[in-house]
Length: 420
Image 1 (tube, rainbow, N blue to C red):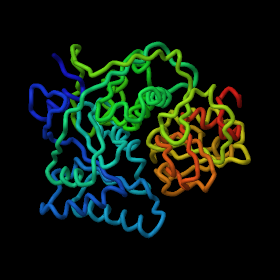
Image 2: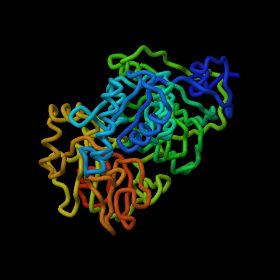
Image 3: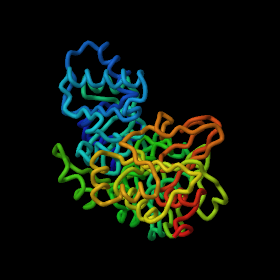
């Protein structure tokens, strides 16, 4: 009996021939990640361990991105703690304002997340890097502290669910829609502590940006990780960027899956998740009349170049509705630069949108777009819990960038065809 991708990665790292679901193992870590919210806690715990140095200054990434540029004194103090820790331990991959990005857009771009690796991060959306064929998962700050000290972590081997998407994508449908549709079918706990493997001709046709968006939201189904087997698209993306040697891992053809789900992509239209859970999905044709106060295009889910190009295609020559605030947040500084070269920023500004420096800000209700009581937002982010983007009396809807851009023009949730 063969192994799934997650099982093979864990077995290889643990030095075992075979691992099985439920087994407890210890494995070395290829990269440890923290941000300005979670790293201060980890740093304080690290100091209690009693070691003098981190296990490897080239295997830790610190990215202040949630409350940056610093929104207040407390966030400034937290960022200062990261900065001083990075200097003290000579951490190579410390990214601050001007050199930073939203962490889960930045690490793939920088070649710091690679196929076949184990990556842990003190942020739940660390599962993003499964799009590159890595086993990547979120951990608590104490686990991050231990990993920075010894370079290892413990794991319970997850069982694996297989999701097969056959057919072809309909217009304006992306990886974001596939994962929203999937979560709508299985629920926010439908993959609890499982590894999710994504397969099928549709997955093979997805761009890397769309794959990253899809794996980013595996955690919204409760998963330990989401993984797409590396192919030529993966290798073309990672090879010129890779900061380390890597060895891709592939599932055995006789791998055993807990359950296999098969979907017909021809039936999947652009999706919208209604408040207050990502599982509350509807096809765009079923949305009805939903007026908006704010639209956010960005985040670690949909702040990449493909997302900005799609938004610009729809916004070109049009204006944002007078009752709507449109916030566009590129994922990294390099994405800002590329968008500027392509003229996308001019399109956004001409449409009367606001373009921000890379930040997680509004996604978690941190800053740069907080909602007031009774306000309603459509966002390309990954969560729409009660109070997620501000006041508990506000509402957040989730969609892909095409729906978001069109809706900013119309002042209500709509399909791109409605504003063409």
